[in-house]
Image 1: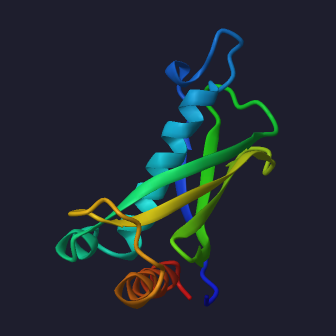
Image 2 (image 1 turned 180 degrees about the horizontal axis):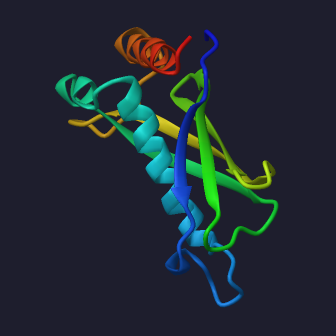
Length: 146
């Protein structure tokens, strides 16, 4: 798999993102990470590319490490990068960085599959699926100025 530049999404922490203690709630991180993945995928390749081929994305698992609290008013930068395409799954690695301090507050590995929308079965990361990721990677690299 060729190297790509991570895609960046900025999200401002709002009061409704936080729990009783004034820190971003763990469930809100899932939403923020999902928003960043959508932006990552859309920046690289129109999602109709996949649907037109009868393909879709499903999340298989999410592993999140919560490292530091984030509070209202903080700008979080979420970087997203496909780090693995193997067999029937891939991994998008995401880093959540407090832009004010420069410190990582959380990171996640999101394992996904590309499925055939008609059968619901996972497709192997080869052929048209792999070609789509290569197009997405090239477009993201171009969009990020490299």
